[in-house]
Image 1 (tube, chains in turn yellow, cyan):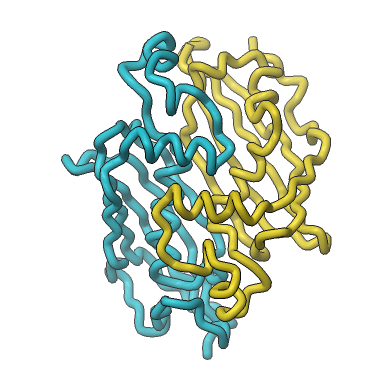
Image 2 (cartoon, helix red, strand yellow):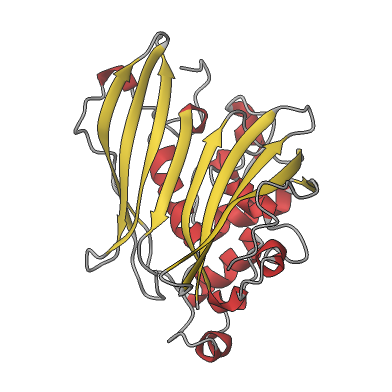
Length: 146
Length: 149
């Protein structure tokens, strides 16, 4: 039997700074060519208040903790055996360089398949900016093949 | 649509987009260990399975492999090369197969639905990423929303 005690219990909020240097490094790492993603002046000329965080960046912010896998470990998952199977984002407002984003994660589901051979964790996170605006809601599913 | 264009982009005129239209294809350079090292640092995902071959082998894998979020970032570029990021309402993927060092990822999108709303249009885009052998690595869907001009 899996431990279901953490389902639907929001974890404590995590507030992270959206660092300009890391946004630029992310753009380099993925071979981004549009300067709104790495050049502050170009971003502002295009009407943005700073460098725009790309569509998947909220997950990176969610990993900005000493152990991004702490919740999976807490559920007893072996994080050397986990794979990411699904990822979804819903967008409400942009995230920009120098923003402060507060993330609240909740485990929506935790279940076994094939008699415990596979263990799935579904987690949803909501991200608000320093103005209290909802920016992004994202949901990820990870699986451990035991 | 917003009055301000993002620099370097020729934003697509969504009113003229029809079901079956394909997004401009995006092919990325083959994944190298350097790509994975950069993305490890840039993404905050420091799981050694993606960058340390010794660790990966000890964990029963043949070698390091790409972060799923790297493939999804490439797919995000397919979208933001085509429309303003602000018009993306939702974006989801299923990671269908592991992406290895040496894989050359090509991202494709096709308009599967065009829905007229009170304020404009919603476009549903079916997404697929394949490697150099056409093996499907990622599938997904995005919804693009554009207000009438």
